[in-house]
Length: 477
Ligand SMILES: Cc1cc2nc3c(=O)[nH]c(=O)nc-3n(C[C@H](O)[C@H](O)[C@H](O)COP(=O)(O)OP(=O)(O)OC[C@H]3O[C@@H](n4cnc5c(N)ncnc54)[C@H](O)[C@@H]3O)c2cc1C
Ligand code: SF4
Ligand code: SF4
View 1 (cartoon, rainbow, N blue to C red):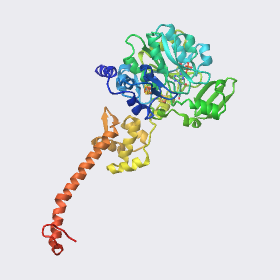
View 2 (view 1 turned 120 degrees about the vertical axis):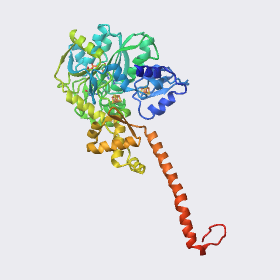
View 3 (view 1 turned 180 degrees about the horizontal axis):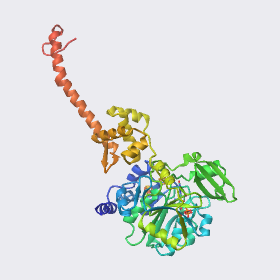
View 4 (view 1 turned 135 degrees about the vertical axis):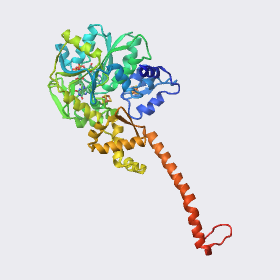
């Protein structure tokens, strides 16, 4: 509770002098922006181009955009505590959950256009009809597959958004409109894992309204990676030569990228070919299964593409899902490959960003062993990890990892809380090391001046007196 209030205070307190420039420096320019649309929605001075938010006019530096960005301060443990009450199962790879199940829509109209089993759309229609929500922020598209954030307030509007758009979408830009124009009080949201972080911040404390725009249901989609619109324009239309308005559906499955055309034909290419169009911050993303959603939905772990695997996480998620079954909107089965989902999520969570070779070589100057360097840099990529996860990821000897961790704690390169390790910001680590090296150097210089030079000088003078030319100065040739 105390931590929740602390985070609420942080979100609500204007920190004068922090503005869009800070967001640019730390998030956008560092390729960390996930283009969720939150900052654009919260501040009328922020607009956007095709790929990123842009400042439109003078910035009074109120810090709102910075505080609410999902990529700045995000105390995961506080959100987990609030959402899961500590009584859900917890898995390193897929987070907290109450149940993992397979499900499918009962509605033929939904199934006709749905990406997989249509569970997302059917759950939303049920939530709308049962009065749990009065609107939902979704992602539609134009006829060229350009993603279009929309507010859906009727089952038909939900239906027009079925299907996955493999392009990053600023889905949250409609949040302001949902509050100011439509005065919606009970919102739902559907999005990829990174967007869920933005929504959870807004749910905790909305800077736009105390009354309107409260999020009641948050559905997350599994996501391994997303793309820039260049995937459509340059790759699908340009390289594959498929006009975008002839396409019915895209899919990614088992290492292949599929383009389903309206005429019934299918083009299939290796997913490797789409690599260059990936959204840049996706490479650092660790969340496959939308760990902070009420319900997470995907196709991984199902035995047929027209089914969904569903992770029920929070009480509200379980309630909506069970009610939708009772209302005959969806049906469920236990036929789901739990391990497959865990494996996908583990693969994403343990993706490592290796430092450049020169960086690793120069780290040797700090007098640390190769296994300490590897442990520190691996832990930096993982964010947080236990000793056993680190050992598994590093494929290293358990004792070697243990000893590296102990030594790194002593050197204050990493910290440990309840068996979980995380790195200290390299800015602090390196400046401490520089300070230590400087202090060591000063001590050595002092030792040379104090202990070495006087004695050597005496011996030299004593034994080389004939070289002395000056009476006062020891000026030898
Ligand atoms: C970019 C992306 C990557 C994905 N990667 C995987 C994966 O690796 N493995 C896996 O199992 N599943 C993945 N999914 C989820 C999967 O494609 C389906 O969305 C999910 O199975 C739900 O199916 P459904 O039939 O219930 O959805 P539907 O009932 O068809 O509803 C789809 C919903 O997705 C929303 N949506 C579509 N595109 C976007 C977008 N770009 N951003 C935000 N919301 C969007 C729409 O608003 C709509 O409500 C991904 C989805 C997306 C959008
Ligand atoms: S991640 Fe979202 S809030 Fe943060 S800078 Fe990008 S668009 Fe704005
Ligand atoms: S991989 Fe991560 S950062 Fe990229 S779109 Fe998916 S959830 Fe967002």
